Length: 87
Image 1 (spheres, rainbow, N blue to C red):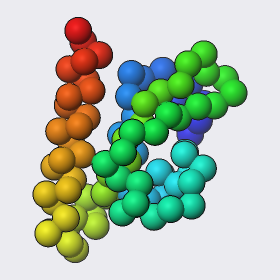
Image 2 (spheres, rainbow, N blue to C red; image 1 turned 45 degrees about the vertical axis):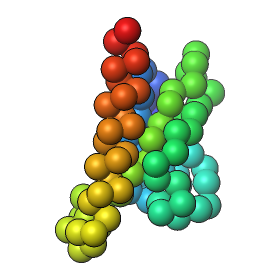
Image 3 (spheres, one colour; image 1 turned 60 degrees about the vertical axis):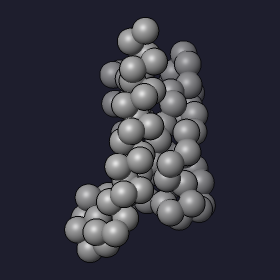
Image 4 (cartoon, helix red, strand yellow; image 1 turned 135 degrees about the vertical axis):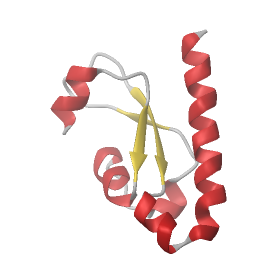
């Protein structure tokens, strides 16, 4: 997966779910602690770090609809960052 990210070299990463967030960020905290905060994703083959935002997985949101408000806040953070990248 890291090589795919290196090849695409996106402006930002949205890490959907705890498994992807923990793996790519090399963190042990759960998704509830990680979500809503920006991290820097880095790997050896990349020329620059990529901002990464963890959020809840859609399957989790189907089981816990009350968490949709938090997921929406995450998407607003992402939208704001993308707006800054275009300026």
